[in-house]
Image (cartoon, rainbow, N blue to C red; front, side):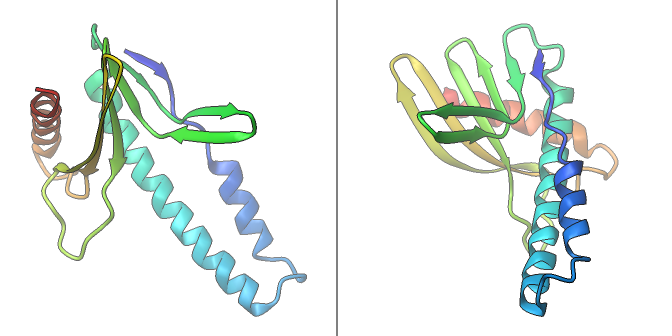
Length: 154
């Protein structure tokens, strides 16, 4: 089931785009801002793609809960978790894979963290969705992700 949708980020992008027009910035600052805006757009596109596919897979799940952009603030310290999926005592954190030169098949690329806290298992995964628009790729992605996460939690 989907408990929290992804946060809206269009205001952040609009602010950065407006700031590029400022006469108060020098050329170096404008170059940095342009690069930062490009990185933000790329990251937001990746997060949007990951959210879309995770929503499709988990929206009707009976034993799992999906939350997007979960943010905790404790004593001024901030923790942000992009796409936590919970299932009783299992938590999978999904992150979009960094683009590579050659597009990879839709799949889980890497299991990069695994932790056990009391009885709760936490798994960090990196997913590749660059070729998801190809015919039948979403079914392959969903099957690969479900099998990969199930095997990792084994």
